[in-house]
Length: 89
Image (tube, rainbow, N blue to C red):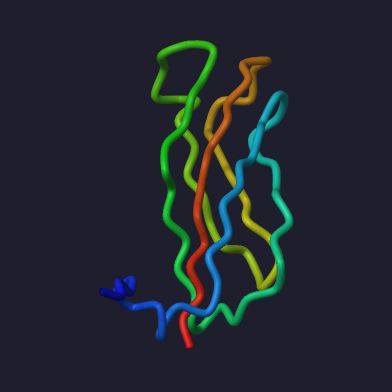
């Protein structure tokens, strides 16, 4: 019996990563180039030194090779955001 994963013929690449912000309001992560018209960024979650909505980041697929995490608070709190970028054919 052979098992196959669904949608493997439509998925071109899957890249996991994270962005850490220690100071300021944003930071970036570099990924392997994707076609931004055929890719989607999914935020998997985030963690912060304190429980405050000011430090809750949002992530954006800025261009073909960059994921940017941005938060409102700029204090010295460390924020880590995990993500996955899925590119389709």
